[in-house]
Every structure is written in C-alpha cells, then in structure tokens.
Image (cartoon, rainbow, N blue to C red; front, side):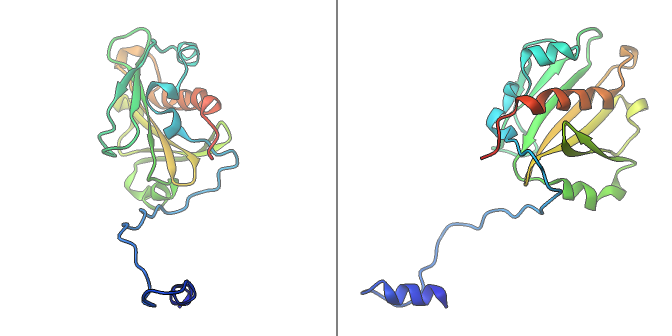
Length: 182
C-alpha cells in the first residue's frame, strides 16, 4: 500500500506499483552476535594472514592463492604449507553467505563438534571424522553477521602437529589483522 501511495504522490504516470527486476538478496540465517565485526572478504586470498603471523605459527610464506570452489565467484582463500614435513598445510577461506547458525542447526551431522571463542569471535569446530586419526580439521569463525572464515588444516601423521590446534592458531593469528566491517 505504501508503494501505491508513493506512486500516487509522485505526480503523473501510472499509479500502479513499480516492481524491481532485481533478484532478492540471499538470506543468511543470523548467527551469534559478533562484538567486533571484521570483513574477511575484504582481505581475501593470502591477505587473510600476514607473512609475519604465518611464520610465527610455523607456516612457510608466501601462501598460495586458492579458488573458492565451495562458493563459486566468492572470495579466494589461501593455503600455507607447514614448515617441516611435506604435505601439511592450513587453508583460510572467507564465505560471505554463511552463518555459524548453519553449523549449530546441523551439529548432529558432525561426530566432532565444539563451540569455541577465538580472538573474541564465536566459532565452531565441526568435523565429520576424527581429526586426531584423520589428520584433518575444520574450524569456522564468525567474522560478522552472514560471514564465516573457514580454517581447514591437513597434517601428515609424522608431523607431530594436532590438526585442530593448527586450524585454530591460523584463525587466532588472522583475526587481529582483518579490516573492520563497514
């Protein structure tokens, strides 16, 4: 009704409501509140973690930019190799259309699920296998409403590195340098 009233007041032309051909924006379920929102998409690629921060947690620099296969057209991620045994790495990728609520709502699908707080941000550890025996771990951090920064680590059995610890350290090192959300 408001559209009709605005159209009638604009003078001349048809009083029929104007419609937009724009598709509706994708709806992302709101997740937990984020006290200090950051925009990981603004620092996508290897800008998600500085060389100094990567080296401080035992990663080789520079990282290698990765195409975001999960969210085509979405921000790129970056993979850093672990110093030491070949085949161990961590990947950071921002997802601009995801909320931690999706993980909370589907927690029963993960055999390894834990709610966390990392660098003051809500996060979850969500894996369908056993990270210790699989050598693979995913940790997901809410950078702002509707955006999640994914940290996936893969470690070789002889590395002596706990995969979830590496994934979490990468997020802890990344968050302070991310730009503030606008």
